[in-house]
Image (tube, rainbow, N blue to C red; front, side, top):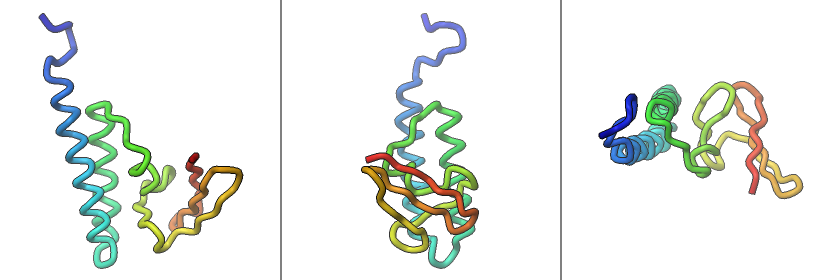
Length: 103
């Protein structure tokens, strides 16, 4: 018998949630040039799914949006990057926040 408040299918829901998150980031990347507002909305939806199903975002996806304003940051397009002591810094063009990524 499952504990109170816990779902028996939690692992399956997390797997489906992660697939949806990855799909939303694919759509955000594809649509960014023509419709950047859709890309930003897709990031917000992906983040909501991650919070709802308690999914930790993979490191490669964490680097794709600003941690302050949650705007989509396309790779090598409109963000300033720099290297410092083994960590990468990415500056958000929308709000100016500096995101630090280790590794």
